[in-house]
Length: 90
Image (cartoon, rainbow, N blue to C red; front, side, top):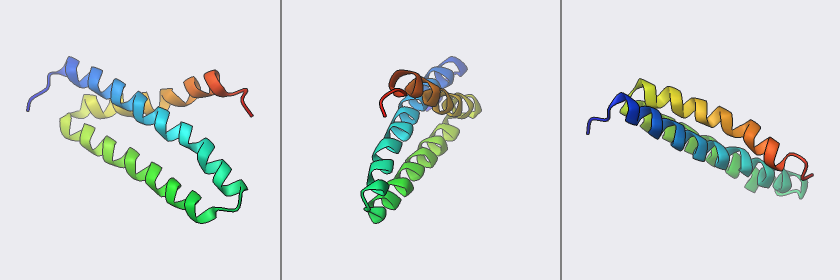
């Protein structure tokens, strides 16, 4: 399947934002697990978060360089957006 440059950019940004939102939102769960003494679950969640991010970026790389770069950008942009939206919930 051949995706044009515009499609790669759109797909990369949308997927990157979604994966980034999941990745950084799950940090809250991870912190809760560590603070409640459930380190095993916290480590499993940490490894799962990283595995999902790597798998998605690998799939985006198969689409093309633009998809990979925009996916990585979307993943990075998700963090400040989540902090801006939920940062004061401590």
